[in-house]
Image (tube, one colour):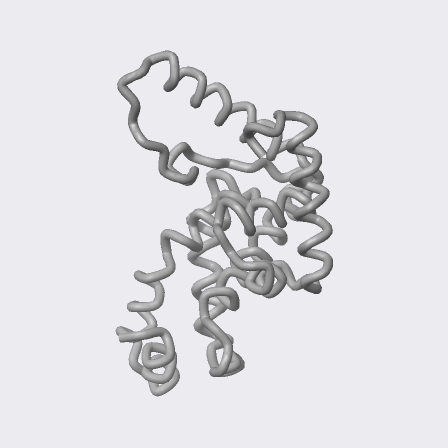
Length: 179
């Protein structure tokens, strides 16, 4: 069952259809919340986002894709969480959230790759919030500029400029080989 059919059935009261959407997007919602700063509370944020999405499903524009709409709710919930904490959000990335790296038999190569990954993650954590959000959406979640704009509720031009500034900062700090 595709997203459109699941949404139509969920709107008609079929809870198992909404469960299919939850199953399909749970890992992505959790990863998004974690990358945008929810940290250990990413699961709670994702669950709250699914509850809010269900409550507001009747207001979902049927001609729009579900994924960016849901991720916008996740982003808003994450923002609410980090704001309520009263401190700057932390980026909690796990090794598995990174682009898959192939195992190497070369211990030196693995050590260098691990060092680069750690430097990159540390540099991403230090980006200003808005630049970090844009970079995370575009490169860690692999969203298009349009999807990123929907998720973060920004104009596409803002996504472009903040992504550009964030990448420029990363290049300066980590070096061109990682950016």
